[in-house]
Length: 307
Image 1 (cartoon, rainbow, N blue to C red):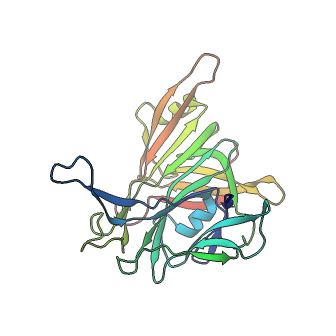
Image 2: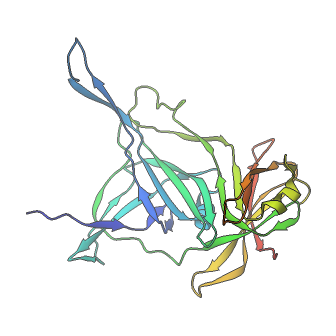
Image 3: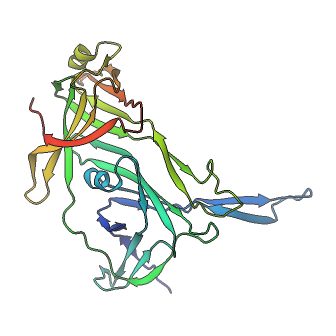
């Protein structure tokens, strides 16, 4: 009897950076056409005209921002690992399986969403698309008997912090979601072109970034936003995330902010209300605007405002 070869998650290497990841999926994205003809009752041939393999994962937000930025990153080294267990224990030896980029293949990665719930960690949902060197050779390789990479240090972790709108600091944030909504064009209008099996090109064409904040004090928010929202003034909009010291396990007074500048967006209220036995809740939404190639959301750092 053959027993399962048990594997588990391991760090992910992107270029020279080793990332701590919370989950990983590698969908092969295989395109299939089933050929049924001449009045036959069933398909007689399955055609595989190509694939668009990807890697999808979650990682702490700050590390993802530092690596991918807000517009994505060209990748020349991408190593996906699955750790092997021997006799019920994760092996310290070079017995693990690695799925690197195939010879001369490349990749392109980006952040889809950053989110954080109250009393939770800020996570970035990321995606990487594999790009073939020739369009005919599959871009994913395989290597047995590999050693696992080591994380250089504990990743930077962040938790939720207050929201600022036009210099007013609002306490009561319950959740934050930053949808980058990137427009990533694969190949030529979504196809590799020339009958190639795999994509060879990925291009960042733009985006439609949106920030939403769930809030436990909708009355104060409505006092600032009104029923139809406000245009950002000189102080703009900032959503803060508080830094967490992963060594001493304490929250720090510093953090990172997601800012949208004056006249670069309109902050509007979203659904607000209350249920029996629960506090009233509401929220806000802002879509970033830019007249040029500058991303409307700026990631900064500083001292988290006090309430």
